[in-house]
Length: 494
Image (cartoon, rainbow, N blue to C red):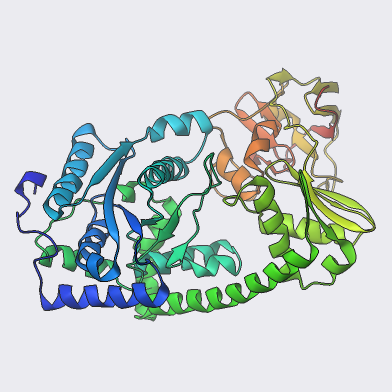
């Protein structure tokens, strides 16, 4: 059905027992959880899909009771054909007109950002969409952006975070109301995010739209789902529902329980932050004795809070970085590099989180390796020698040492930085893997990925230095000679 064919009487005035009851459930949820507050100007993000269309229909119905002002926002990611994008916007614009609501529309070139910044499509789309919503909310003086996430989305997010091992905070999934998710931009923080539909399902949003006389568009944001989330939604969740038909409720209860625990930990962290943290222009300092006396969960929250203060509220530490700081606390003195150009220094009296003096590592231009011999590349000295294949299989003394099958890699090896589309066959895994995915899985900070050395043969990447060997370069039963490579860090200015 084209936008022009949509029924003229669509909207809040078309009621049925179902639509009335569903709106009542949303009203109770919004009031109980303080999702939207009286007097707020709400910017509702509407893609044209069933969830966001139901969101705006329900909010229009409840606007007077909630005491809110409503504006519709639509964003084109420039991932669909021009006709499809035009029809999406026309559908949203037509609904806004029929409901008597103002609309703001914008667009962002997601493919261009992917090429320029080497982000995933989902990551690039999210940044552009949220930048647009933040700008419009600020211009309109809207304190909150409403999103159409449902109970299904919350359950999927909890399960996805559980599979990724993202810790207690990840088990929350989606909160009814939360802070702006991206780092602060000039002009202050973004508005709050509100999710009024977290207690209802996708099936209910579709039925609501139909009984309100509206045929929603295919949600264009479904194009942005990661492959993992797509498989989770269409394969894993249906299977788990066969084991537990109330899976979504169970996952959401888990999220609620995690949220209660986290709120308690956050309150305790607030008290310790006020007591311990000394704020400097370029760092945060904690007294070592008091800091190490805290439970690990509180130490982790204080570390994350220090990073938020120095690098922005939308950035975070991975578990591997927290673990590195914990290891450092067991030593008399130690220093740990952190993402976002930060460092943690453990001294006799203090624990300091500060901006790192270390420059961002430079990328490596394609350089031929001297085999045998020594080669200097930015940030590294590479020693190479031809040796007989060790027996038994050698164990590298450091992760910057490797043995390669000389016949397999050939006489000419080069070292370089990554390029778009790089792939390899990691030893121990089946099939190919994108280099980008390998570096993400290895928790290499984005700003350091261009400086990871890649040893390449004529056929492709033979060794991602410090991380993975390609199975084609590995020593085997028929190896006649081996190339032993040892990388040693040097000054970036070299």
